[in-house]
Length: 185
Picture (cartoon, one colour):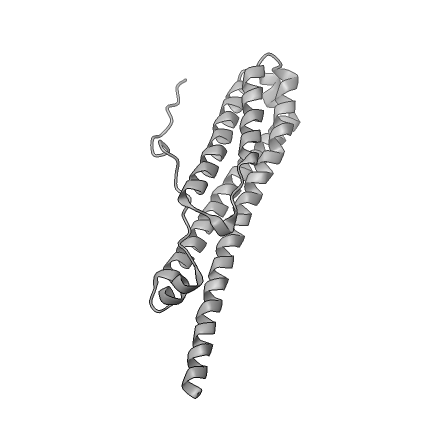
């Protein structure tokens, strides 16, 4: 009886540690989504500020809002993360980043806009949000790495497979991210 009790308590401890690791991954994912939402919330304000100065740049403004709409429509449940769903989410967010880059490039053509306090503040907040996104993605990858290592190590791997704990995918850089952008003056 004592041996069975020790075995059951040991299994319960392993199971609880797996649940704790998985919850860390879920929490890290929620923080990633939180920062992407912050960016999505800033975009309409930035677009409206630019719109007042560059109304004939409608194509760029529309592209930014469309990318935002698409990115906010792609949702991923942390409990069901797969490499495919994470790639789709990452691609949608990448389109937002690309559209924002075009918007900021348009702003360079308008000296009055570049001096506008609202624009400068929004641009600063957006830059800070991009940094926060990078930090939260790194934290997510660290939590996923800890979790993935935990469920692959013996003897936890036995209980992990019995109770349905699966490997979580990592955020990876988008294709072409290793190539530095060309800046021309």
